[in-house]
Length: 171
Image 1: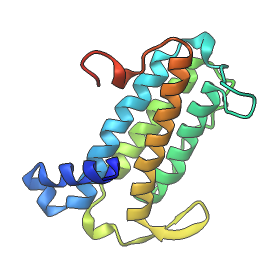
Image 2 (image 1 turned 120 degrees about the horizontal axis):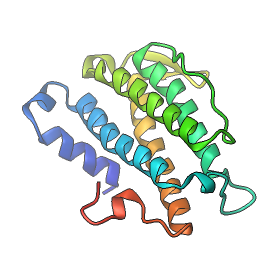
Image 3 (image 1 turned 30 degrees about the vertical axis):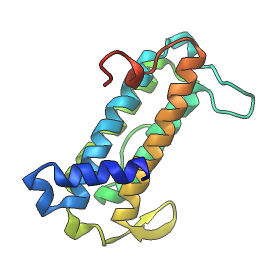
């Protein structure tokens, strides 16, 4: 079974509130866990390693953080029906600025997801120039965050840093 599917099923069965909105609750819970991991990984990377990239074809760690923050504005804006007013950041910005931008984008996503209900999942939204459902944007968000955290974890390990979810006791 795909790990995301297992996580959705676990979230759906976990509480009475989930019975009212099982899919949106699953997306919200999964996003909260991923959000904590993304932020913790960004904080764990030393400032002088934000320019690190494993190969010439890959993004630097700083570019990855800027990319996540930017994507969050687009995807969570579609989910919540509200445009992000966050200032653009660049992968060459300092760690403090990038972590702050990431944190603000995660807060923006949390607010967008908080208003999500199963009744709204079939609503059509514009996402990356295409028409899709809020459900697709929500699942796309948590799927994207899984991928981005995996990248962060690899970058951390290549720099001798244990990723947050691999530490004693996990996240």
